[in-house]
Image (cartoon, rainbow, N blue to C red; front, side, top):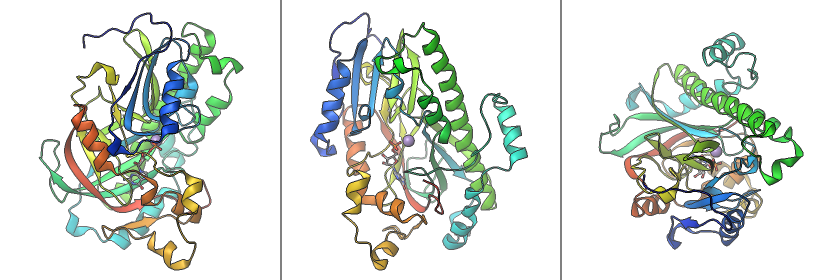
Length: 372
Ligand SMILES: Nc1nc2c(ncn2[C@@H]2O[C@H](COP(=O)(O)O)[C@@H](O)[C@H]2O)c(=O)[nH]1
Ligand SMILES: [Mn+2]
């Protein structure tokens, strides 16, 4: 990849990998420009799912010679995993399956969780509480069916898949809240604080990856079948890259093969192949459609009457949405997100991705309530 990012001073270049078709919020572009001025920033890339975030935009990658925990955010290790379910479509009864998925509320049984942590080398490093659970917000475990594919990823039309979106639950937030006050200016990678952060970050990433796998295995077991992994991609992280530090905030790893591009519960998701041939994209790519409307404004878009709320539990694909938390049901409704087709069109046009499969949701499992 013949480009080097060495020793820049001043404002870093900002590359936009989107067109106006992807409906970019101007506030997110302002955030991109702002972060480009942070000390030690080498290069910044914004993708078509770009939208405003708390400390910087989401749907972007940042290469710097300092470590900025705020560019990873609190949900360290959040990612998307895709598994093929070894179950034929004709054997799936939607309502029965939705009921069975309620096991996801319980999480992994403690003895099994302890074994899983030991196998992942995490014993004594990070706890088992919450392992095997999805968490709140826009995290989900979604049963999908493949509507179109070229067959190259081992998928066929009509196959069933599980797309799991979850992160490090409370651990990432605990790590972030426990940081030394100097985090705002970024950590010197050689400093004790920088190294301590990287060690905790590595645990949170490993825990989140394990959690997604346990969620998929628990869901498959509840459905009386098994799963075959297709890919698992982290989208909130910082890693060493070409002598600098690559922060991805809501951006998937384009240098690890396949990644899922999540749409919404009212839109298709895609499996992408990634050539990783555009150095300015910083080996990164969109992982989702990205928010169009923030959570607060979604409350003004849905009338809180029984018929409208019930309508939110059925999708245009004839699918089911399991979410007994009324606020979450509204805040995560399909229109909250941009069109994944537009995001995909931009990624393809910029040479960042090629679609291998298109899946639609059948059951979107969020939470049965209580926990956000
Ligand atoms: N297939 C589904 N995709 C969904 C759903 N809710 C949200 N999303 C997509 O996931 C990403 C997650 O974004 P993140 O920044 O929080 O990691 C988001 O951009 C949406 O496109 C869903 O229920 N099903
Ligand atoms: Mn996420």
